[in-house]
Amino acid sequence: MLVYGAAGHTGRFVVQALRELGHAVLLAGRDLGKLHAAFPDAPADQLRVQGLGDAAALTRLLAESSLVVNCAGPFADSAPQLLQAALQAGVHYVDVSAEQPTAREVFGQWGERYAAAGLCAAPAAAFYGALGDLLATSVLGDWPDADAIEVHIALDSWHPTEGTRKTGQRNAGRHVVYANGQFQAPPAVAPRKTWAFAAPFGEQAVVGFSSADAVTIAHHVRVPDVPAWMNETPLTELRAADTPAPVAVDPSGRSAQRFLVEVVVRRGGEARRASASGQDIYAITGPLAAQAVGRILAAGGALTGALSAGQLGDARSFLQALALRYLQLDFGG
Ligand SMILES: NC(=O)c1ccc[n+]([C@@H]2O[C@H](COP(=O)([O-])OP(=O)(O)OC[C@H]3O[C@@H](n4cnc5c(N)ncnc54)[C@H](OP(=O)(O)O)[C@@H]3O)[C@@H](O)[C@H]2O)c1
Image 1 (tube, rainbow, N blue to C red):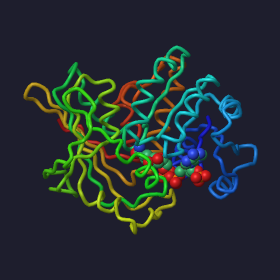
Image 2 (cartoon, helix red, strand yellow):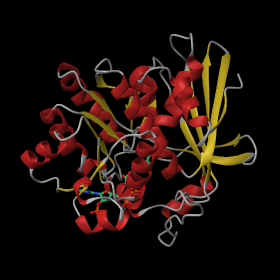
Image 3 (tube, rainbow, N blue to C red):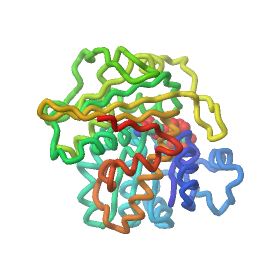
């Protein structure tokens, strides 16, 4: 397995989670110094330095592995090159993008090519994109469709990384919402309401949020509306230029940030709910991506085309695999 962008904040969590599952990982990126700094104990033969500009060299690099995990964001600038190189090299592709346009391109433009090659492309296998999708898929159960799937996200803080800030700038004006069965520009004035989250968040003011979960859920669930909401405090922090980067508070590198994602699936007057909570949206992306990788490889070629996390086998067991160490789950009904 090869992780591209391995030295980034999120890349390091992904590498850590893959190693915990027993995978040997090639550590790749465009800057040898940053790879050395991030992985001081890694033997030289595990490091690979390659920019994205040389397609043939990138293809040769990816061919050293059976799967690439792309952690280099903004993904608008890395996904096209790595998707093409992975296809050429005949290897599966997973990314941790939160970018709606990138995920939509993977589902819309790359899926058929990957399927024809017997390969899998799994975008947004990360906090945004996977967690809401996995919760929704889990509780959908025997319902063949839904009237609406609501995703409510609460963070007690959001100290963004440099990659998050660059990604926000790169995707400005490119966000969408999924309503009335189609992707459309968000309303000029973002909708607001209050939402009673479980403890410790409680009642919060929330604002309409263009989440990657709308893209991953709408990709495979028959549902006309996937509104997503987030409490306002972290969004204010995200927008402020002086909000600091995340600081590690435990040996695994996690920050103190707490998250809670609550999903409500509505159909014919009934509602099913599920939630997941944990620590640090960047850190949880490691085990989410690693679980996606494990499932793709274990499927031995049975998972092909562009698939969201919720489509990588049974969604509930995907989440339960993370429950022991990383997530508190509630499928409370
Ligand atoms: N979906 C989610 O929930 C989720 C969760 C976590 C992160 N993310 C996304 O993951 C991305 C990375 O976040 P991060 O926190 O890890 O940021 P980061 O610490 O700044 O790391 C970004 C990494 O990507 C590399 N990179 C960026 N552009 C590149 C390019 N054009 N060519 C080669 N390498 C490139 C950087 O290399 P250099 O250091 O050489 O620039 C660095 O290794 C962001 O887009 C973020 O939104 C999404």
